[in-house]
Image 1 (cartoon, rainbow, N blue to C red):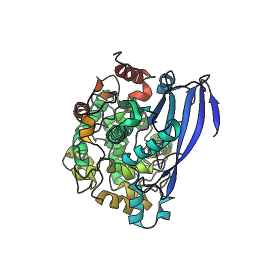
Image 2: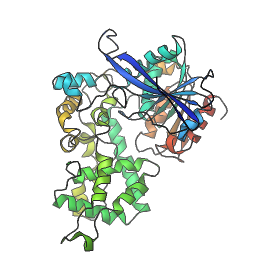
Image 3: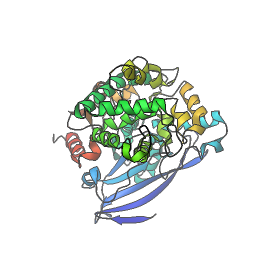
Image 4: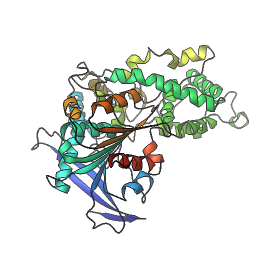
Length: 440
C-alpha cells in the first residue's frame, strides 16, 4: 500500500477485490479503490472510520491536498475512507474504452446494471468486513447521490452503520424518474430567474449566443456539435453556490471583439468554447450520463423503466423551448441536471455508447433500492442537511423521506446550495455531527 504525506494528513492507498455481481460471489471480480485519510500524528490511533460516499452517479472521490474543505472537520474525529465507487477513478473502469470487451449492446447494458446503489452498498459491506471485521461498524457521509446510497445502506445493511450524515441527498423513496424531472424543471426555472435578476445583461447575451448557434454549425474543440441544446445544458452550473457567477463569467468571454475577429459577423471565442466543453463533455464521467436516470429505477415504483424521463416530460415545460423564446422576447432558459438522448449523438465520449444508453432507458424491472419497512424501524442515528431550494434534489421529496426514516433529524437551510458540504469549510458536517450527538 502506497502512503503519502500531505500537509496535516497521511493518505494510504487501498485496493479491494469484490464480485461484479454480488449474487454470484464466486464469479467475475473487479477492483474497487479507496484512499484512507488520517490526521498527521494520529496514524496509529484507534479512530472510528467514516466512509465518504461521493455524489454522482459516476463521480470519483475527492483528491485532497491536506485537510481541506469538510475533510479537516472529519479528521478531528475520524479515520476517513474516500471511496472511488465501482467504475470510477482508480476502480475498474466502465466507459467507451472498456465496455466493448463485454460483448454486444445487451451484454454491455447488463454489465452496467451492476453499477447502481445496491451494488455500491454491497461493495462497501465487503470492504467494511475486510477493514473492520465482521462486527465492526463505521459512520457514513453521503453527499447527493452518496446520500441515496446511504439510504440504500440503511435499507439493506444497517448493522454495519454506526451513524449516518447525509447532505443534499435524501432521495424520494417512491419517486419515479418522471416524478423527479417534473419537480426539477420548475426549480431550474427559478434558478434561471434568479440568475437573470442578478445579471440582467446576460438575457441579451444568452439570446445572441442561442441565435448564433441556431444559424451556424459550431463545434467544440473535441469535435462535438455545440448546439443550442448543448449550450442550455450549461445550466447545470446554477445548482452550486457560486454557479451563477461562474456562468456569468463564462458568458462574458463568448464573442470575440468585432475589431479583432476579422469577420463580418460575431464569432464565438476559443476561450468560451473550450470552457463550455469542460462543462458539457462527459469524457471524464460517462457513468453520470449512462446511469443518471437508472438510479431512480425501481420495479415497485415504475416497472416500465425510466424511458428518457427528462426528455419525456420536457414538453410539459414550454419555457425551456429556446426557439419559442427566440421568436418572442423571453429569456432563453438553461436546463439543469437532465440527461437527453441527443447527448449520445453529440458527445464523442458518449457516441459509442448510444445503443447501450437506449437499452438502459428501455430496461424494465429494476430492483428496488429502498426497504420502506426497514427504514421505518431504523435504529441508526441519522442527520441530514436539506437545502431548501436545492436544484438537484427536491426538498419536498427530502422532507417526505426524512419523515419515513425513523429517528432521522433534518437541518433545513437556505444558507447553502447543493454544494454546501464542499464550500462550507466544515460547517455543514459539524452541524450534522452535533445533531447526531444531540448537541444541536
